[in-house]
Image 1 (cartoon, rainbow, N blue to C red):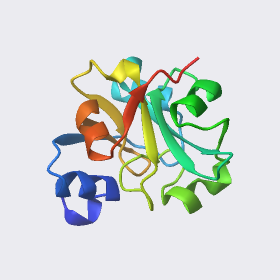
Image 2: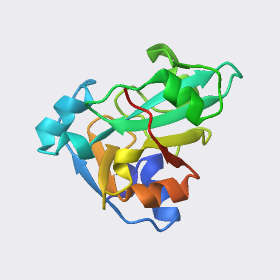
Image 3: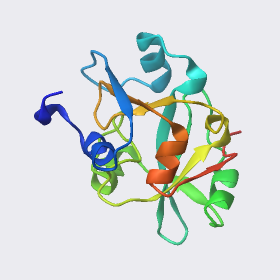
Length: 158
């Protein structure tokens, strides 16, 4: 892959010698994760979305969950030791993460936030997450991801 096509997420994975592959798709603007998975022929249960939230303490957190699932804010808050968390407003995503909506990934953000991956990823050999820009997905081991970013697995969906 040409160097200029790499995202911060890919550079992070390369630097940390983590195996991954990418899948790209044609997309001019944001489409949700379900449509992305369908477009790429990926099962919904191995295609994860990244949601960013902030807690009462002012700290930010990333939550990765299957694209067809909904984040349980109470479980999410408990998983990061907060009384409550609120999803980041779309207009703030780029400012906080460095990524755009639809291209947000927990890897290579401006600052590494505590990341919680839904426990359904634990037994998977690999899963798909955003690659750091719209139109790019990264396939990697959930365990490799969690280890590399000091994340954890928890039950965070409704």
